[in-house]
Image (spheres, rainbow, N blue to C red):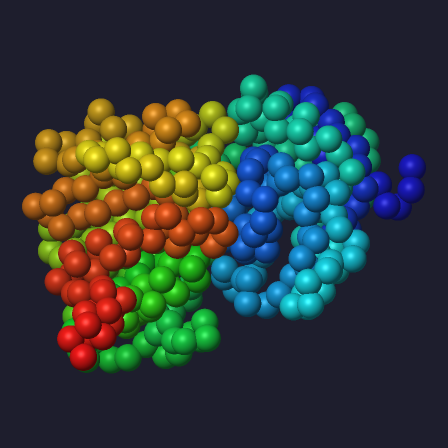
Length: 385
């Protein structure tokens, strides 16, 4: 036993021994696996991973280092990181540091040197389990007991823990500026409810020429509408959608009043607001290579996903139209209610990380708001000139 050892223990008694990669300490959470080959910094800083430990299935992580612009939020929200091997000497000239130092500086407990393929297969068979990762307590039985005594995701309102504290204007350069006066509405203003929003979503909206006002999760609907937006986005976020009352309240108060786009947790909240049910997946969808088919039409997009809960499609009300399904397991990946100007997707159209196949969702939302996509407008202007 050395001070560099680390131990990962699962609630079902499975134990993995490896080496400490990040900070000293002990971390708790549900263990999930992510199949992305790149984007580890974006994954770590995605607020939707609050309450979860992330296992990266790609065997070598950290080979291009870390960089400030790769953050998807204000800090690391994943509870811990599990990898097969961490690159010691990142190569790209743009790198600003090593992954190990990045984790240690931010107090993130991490482990390397374990068989992540075996761990992933175990999760696929047993489901997402409660786990504890420790560098200070290396007793197998004691850690398994701690894992069994820890809390899971069911019934947890994690969105309330990760949301912003006050409204702000998302400005170029990922800056958060004071929100403008609520009465000074603009022709391209949208309000984003922050249930754990990724900067990639905000960047995508801004790239469409939209003025983006971000508000805390518990913002009353009348206060959000006082900004006079042309549309509202219900963002992604962590935890159990059925245990996130502020998300459902926002959806119930907004749907039918103006165009609404729901993404991930926002998609689930909209489903609940319409009377549908949500349920927990066995091992969730986490990765940047999930194929989704659009209905009708049959167009297939490879998408970025990060969710452990889904809306049960058979419980959607009349008038709701299924627009997307997973080609992996048939899960609902999107629905719309045209007469209520509602568009919802379970996947992440902003990617970050991942392919950009589904960025057309933001084009569709812009059109739903009665706005021409700025890229289309630029092309049209060039042709007319």
